Every structure is written in C-alpha cells, then in structure tokens.
Length: 336
Image 1 (cartoon, helix red, strand yellow):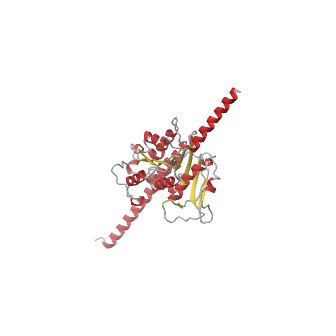
Image 2: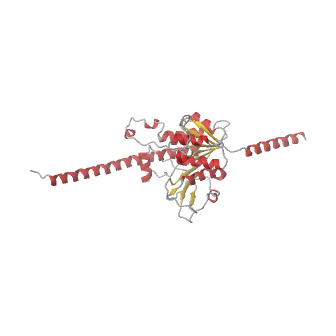
C-alpha cells in the first residue's frame, strides 16, 4: 500500500511539473532580426504575445530610437527600435560567436534563424593561397559554422531550446544557372547553405524545420489562395513570395509538431491553386524520409565551369568589340 501511494505521489508530481512546463510562456530567439524578414518575424511574434530574444551585432547605446521601422535607415536603428519594444530582449553578439549564441538560446523554446551571408566574392578569392573562408563574413562562417554554433548551443546541458527553424533556399542542383551565379558572386552561399542544412539533419537531439522560400522582396506577389508547400525537400516552381508570408510560416511551424525534422519548399502558385493560410498545408507535412545528397564538391565544380564560361564569353565580347573598333578605324582612317 505504501509503494502504491508513493507511486501515485510521483505520478502526481510529474503531472504537476508537466502542467507547469506546458503553461510556461514561450520565448523565441531570432537571428537576423534586423533584416527585412527578421524584423517582420519579430513583430509577428510580439503580436502573438510571444517574448523574443534577438541577436544583434551593433552597439545601439548611442543610437537614437526611430519612431517606427519605416524611419529606420540603418541596421543599428532597426535594432534600437526592436530593442525598445516590450518583451524584446537584446543579446549583443553574432552568429559566428559561440558564446553569444549560447546566451541567446538560453531560456528559449525555439530559435528562428532567418539570416544569411551577404559577402560578395572578390577576385582574390580565386588565388590558391587565399584564406577567404576565414573571413567572419564569408558564407562558410555564416551559413555553416553559424548553424553549427546554434546546434551546439541547443545541445548544451539544461538548454530548453530544442527547435531550430532555418531559412535557406533552393539550391540542391549545383548546375542550375542561378545556383552557379549566386555561388560565384556570393562566396559559395548556396553551397554552404546546403552544408548547414546537413548539420541540422545530422543532429538527432534537436529538431529542425528547414524552409526554402521563393524570391522574397518583390512587390508583385499575388494574394488569396496562392500558398503552396512541398515537404521532404520537394520541388516547386520558383515564385515571388512576401517577407510577411515567410515570417508567418516560420512562426506557424512551431505549432505543428509534425513539421519537426522536415524540409519545406515554400512558393506561391497561381490564385485559386493553393491555400489562403498555411494551416491546412502544415497539417499534412511529413518529416524528411529521403537521403539528401552531399553536393558541395559538385557546387565547386559547377562554379569553376561557370567562371570559365563567363570568362570565355567576356573574352569573346572584348575580341568582338576590338575587331569592330579596328574595322571602324580602318574605314575612317584609310591606310596611306
């Protein structure tokens, strides 16, 4: 009888703890909060009364807080405005810094990684002795090592953050002309994004949702029943999609446990062919079941081939221009 009472007491205690945990307010970390997508993500979280922690590189101590985001002209001003909002906690640091990422995810339930590398390739990157990948702004450091820092922080003992939502983009096909161009001009951004995705899939004790959205920021996005998702890293025709729509998707994923360990392609389709909200689509999402290819070396080969092709086109263009100029000069200045 005593054992039965003891067992009952333990069960009641566990139920009480579970109830307390379930009633705890969610707190979500956002990396990339000052970007176009990030600032909308923060505002939408706050509209749902969800406290937010943001990771910011800028020192905003001397920055005048703008009246609204429309009047914010710099990333520092955006950060200052967001930090001034109720229920927003600012953590000074960068995704490439392990300690600041660990401080960011502390006491949170999820992290929305809505950032990306914006370093432009330099001619010196092609030199054999170049150490461009050591540059803190390089895609390797931001899109790959940054993701590693997030995963490592979430794995720390006592960390409550066990869900990562990561924005990347289409790019599994290294030989796609757009992938080649972005890799060539953007310090291998597509390739290192794919490597960052692989880190998330290889981590078994932290759940992920990878979102590959369409082209964000274009003003000609349709509305209505236009939303479409493809899980398991499926393919959809590339389309324009608003920042606000992608922000909604990032947040709504957190309410659907079935979207854990899933890779989603998010695009807009012609009006009437999709859904008006993401709810019906997210309810049908299945976790990743296929093996995603390791294509980093193929990305490198594609970029080298693309560089050779572009160089050949440029040389041919220059040769054609020089030949045309010579022909014109010989016509204008006939030989004596």
